[in-house]
Length: 254
Ligand code: COA
Image (cartoon, rainbow, N blue to C red; front, top):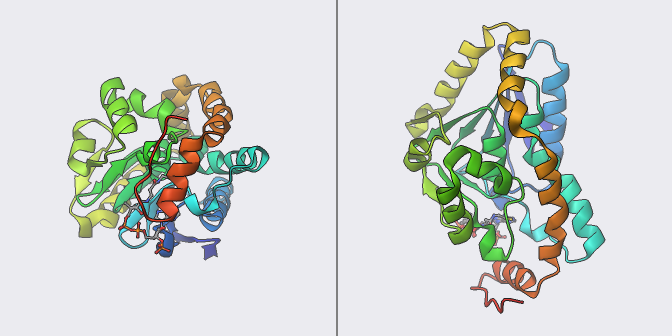
């Protein structure tokens, strides 16, 4: 079934959620956010589902927040962030195991969606990046999570340069469990989901919550609530406008 812009399928006891808004490279548009929220609600309430897989349709996993939906009004942006953060953190906040099968670019919110999941399997064509700095912004969820996975230096390099890394590098940095040939991605994700799905649900749930226990959560609230400040800067307005006008931004440090 289609939930917003997310295709929801069930195979055996595995739910597969496929982001499908290819005209926007599966950016977290309202339709994608709605589909993720409704899809994971279904994953939680369907006792028959043991494991979920998230992937993207087409050549991209997800190009991040929907830049065309940005506003510079403080109240609008606060409401927007309140709406986006639950989608970014959905993998972490779902009690069942979630596998990200990353088929292509995972940028910004796309990388965040992936690292919120429990296990990432990447196609050899996948790339991971947090390019928000090019818009005068920050990756709200990744800024508090990425360094816990790949370390401070690399996470700062990625956040400060905006440059993406390859699937192989993401593997070396422990962000990704395995890199597989592109055409084998879903088979590999299904094989992993099947293996996990045979295990007892209560022990799986506890494995997830135990390992995630130290993640806290207050830092996410901090990141979310401090973000509207950036939207009030001239540089963020310039960065976002330049992206939409398909030109290089000119930042003034204002
Ligand atoms: N939000 C909204 N629309 C997006 C988008 C996003 N995050 N990323 C891409 N799109 C749209 C583009 O505006 C374009 O739309 P158009 O065809 O109507 O002009 C379409 O998707 C294709 O993107 P395009 O930039 O033409 O493709 P590309 O292959 O040249 O570049 C990217 C791909 C992903 C490198 C580039 O689109 C990009 O940098 N996107 C923004 C990523 C980002 O900053 N994410 C974090 C947001 S906070």
